[in-house]
Image 1 (cartoon, rainbow, N blue to C red):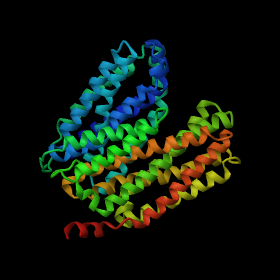
Image 2 (cartoon, helix red, strand yellow):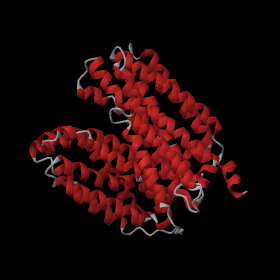
Image 3 (tube, rainbow, N blue to C red):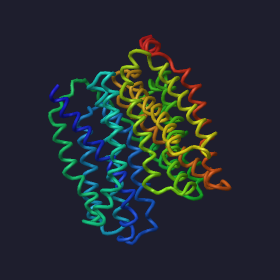
Image 4 (tube, rainbow, N blue to C red):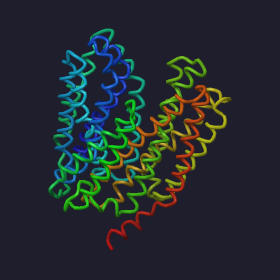
Length: 443
């Protein structure tokens, strides 16, 4: 148990690195771009990182089923730390963008493998509590990160934003050293050709959400996915195992989380914008409203493991999706008249359902999968969440930009999120019980 505690702290530190990096960069990146003299490449600081970290998620999951989680997590942390050293030494925006890509290659495995290891080591009941800890880290980092970013830029130098990751990365690896994996891993050939086609297709689709004249990126991305599907049908060991798609439970849960992620992140992205520009609220007070989601998230995810044991996956998916839909309906109907406390309360309830559904979604992707594909199953869901988030935020951004006013745009965003939430209710009723899935696997 003592060794597990070391591993747990290693996973906590891994999550902390990722959370702080995301939040610090949001604050410090304008200063960095000004000093390096490449403001036209500003967006690519984030785009390259997003592409690298998203595309590699399923690859890490696949490899972890073949070679184990520990080695891969150490490699991911090493990539991230190396990228941090290089980024901190960058003398141009081009170099910084490239090195952020190296960081992204590591980041794609850090959170994914952490969740897979949690699934290997801890019981269902404990996993909900651990995910609550990880959620609280992200919540705290959303407050501490911008402060640290300002401190490094104004007091030291922006380069310390990256150099601070070096001792943290070393500490992570040291915590993982005592971890001895007890699972047996099946080493198969991996379809790298399929992964390359898949990666290019997804990169094009993600770029279509971040560039102008995105239609060609979208078309070629869809064509790439079609080619990927045709290639995978003829491969003996496909990159995405066929058993993943034959498993009704995993298939429906993944579709559920894809849609749910598209509706969830719109709230957290655009509520502060609405309060700042629509209600002329300060940046600090408008950002503080997101604490409601973070607090609700912890209350929803902490008991999720115990509730899964008592009530089952399906019932919790149904309850969580109904709560999200009802709270979303309140936001859509009354956003113009809500007080700050009223808005905080609704977001608190919504955060509760977010925490519950994201926790049971992760646990379901592990428990409904066969042991030899648990890694790829977990990583595939996290990958689809990223895709859903990118698509959702892009659509919502378009709704705001093309609206007659910000208030109308925000209401359109809530209407879009409400529509997706209603669809998730339908999917929640289609999710089979764990017993049904296990019966299908054994037949």
